[in-house]
Each structure stands twice: as structure tokens, then as C-alpha cells.
Image (cartoon, rainbow, N blue to C red; front, side, top):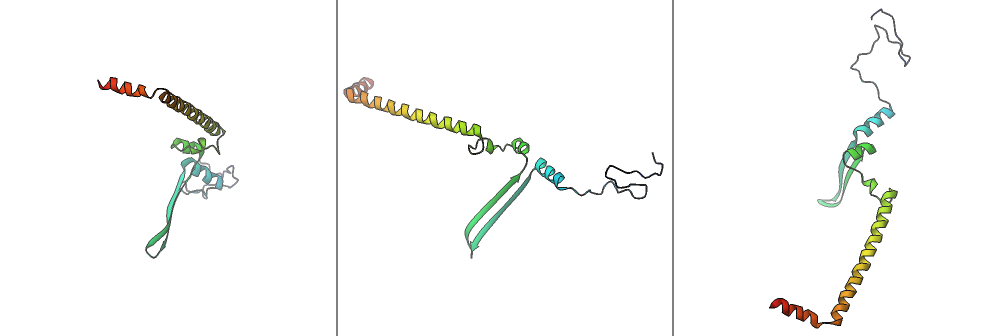
Length: 136
């Protein structure tokens, strides 16, 4: 409905028939909008820095930086913080459990090794008999 009357939007700026902004003009983004867009889409910064003396490369730094929200990172398959014991209490518990199980396996292997050594020490001729039976 075009009645020639100026309208005042929520922002307070008066928009009339003669002073309307074109719809294609980009609105300046504030910091919160920009941050939301970056975290939603993600941004990758990549670069290589090489320190050379003459034609000999002394040091090369490869920089890869990904800035994204946690949801976006998980969506693209990045979730290292879930398995890092210094960042996740669940990962810490799993690491401690793994260490206990490794100790237990090592103790069991030692006991089995000692038992095998004891059996060999008791009857060393038994192995020779088995070999002779298997050969015939």
C-alpha cells in the first residue's frame, strides 16, 4: 500500500518514498554477526613460512588454522578435544583404565612366561620327545 506517508522502522531511521535504500546495498555487519557467520561456516587460514640462508632452507613452519564452532567442527569430523585427557574428564578416565589394563596384561604375560620357563626346567627331555613324535 503506497500512501506517500513516511514509515519509521524499529531502528528509528525514517524511510519515506524518496529516501528508501536500495535492497541490494549491503548493510554493515556488526562484530556479533561477523563472529556468528565465521563460526557457522568456518574459516581456514593456511600458510608456509620458510627461513632460508642463501639457497638453504633452515626452518619451515607450516601453519594451518581452523576457526569454527564445535558443532561445525564435529560435522566435518574434527573432535580431538573429546579424546585429549587434558581437556576431557571422560578421556582421562579412559586413559587411566587403559593404563591399568596394560599393567594387568603385562603381569599376566610375565606369569605365563615364568610358568613356561618352569615347565621347560622341570622336563627338558619332553620337548625332544615331542619333536621326535612329530617327525615320525
